Figure 1 (tube, rainbow, N blue to C red):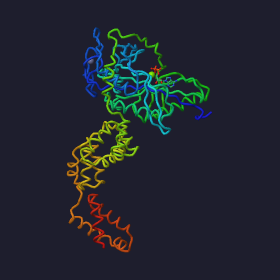
Figure 2: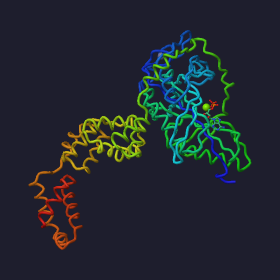
Figure 3: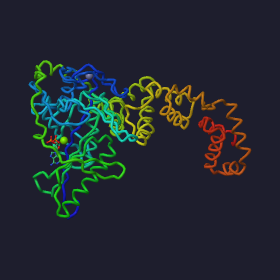
Figure 4: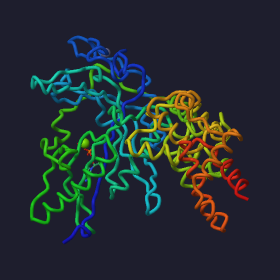
Length: 478
Ligand code: ADP
Ligand code: MG
Ligand code: ZN
């Protein structure tokens, strides 16, 4: 049998850190990047005798996420203890939710090359993040940093509805964009605020029973998720083809070797000895509370896209790219409003900015410059102060060291030469230096003009105004 004889089945568990100001059960700050163990208190360090108090914002954000993913919201929910020991989990249990999650039975719609598809959301529950181990290569030891302990998470569990890597990619991007739109998480993948456990199994086509799955934990790059899934599918097919049996286990993806490795046998729920958290009260929500959150949901990607098609008459593709990220579309709207040239702003975002984001695997939210700086770049080109090829260089500067584009071009001496006298001087110089091209042009070879303009641009390091050059050459050579 070959790969075509198998169907791949996948389901994802996504963890998103919520962007509340404080942690889930204490008032320590959640901000990323502080010195180790400075955002801690007796509660999140698990000192005996301390008691958790649930942060109300966490519930609100989770309900928001549930409503935005078409979930039912539970009016009667609770927290449970999930018992396991790990050095970065000082309580030796994690407060999570077991049998009564806040949100359940939802779906999101994804777009694939085969059309639209609904992916079921089994549940969304709230829980606390663990701390972090910093492995010290010099001493061989590990250092525990508890700043992340108690940072609120939502875990979004999908149904095993995903069949291809394309669907997984599209699902993750859609989910990420929804969470960004409703502003419950910054979803910075490199900081681990948005990470996925990927469950993969295979079965013979036509089979209805699910195969045994393996799980790859804490994946936080789209590229490695795709690679890891492709590898894992191949590995499972190999095992089955060689009359082997897939073990249910937790795997670690190794980016360097491009392989998955076994970490441990997969635990079952019973291994965790879940029981209701005795230190917290049940979470009871009123209809009114839920409806108020529903009323306040912001404009979502689809309706924003629709608006771009109607108001700005953008193409399907452009509107899709812009609205796939709230950050990108905010950038588009703000910069367009400032400079008044939405077509140019759209072009910059769709082409050069997207290309740089892709090449550097940067998330739109990490774009270092702001809308006013992008707007200024567009205006400088519109006014003829710089050419669009210089504009590209300004954009690179904006990514590297963002500042006012006007300062950049002054500093770099990139201001376009649009002075008539100066242009004429260059044109005459180039004419004198290229008698053959001049003769060609006069002899009817229009292409020679392009060459002469090119020489003038080279001479001025791209700074001469190309329209003026064209006009001036044509006049001088008449
Ligand atoms: P756990 O939390 O122990 O990993 P769950 O039963 O909640 O277990 O399942 C987690 C995820 O695994 C879900 O997203 C689900 O869709 C997916 N899943 C379950 N069974 C399979 C399977 N046989 N193949 C692929 N994915 C699966
Ligand atoms: Mg799991
Ligand atoms: Zn604390």
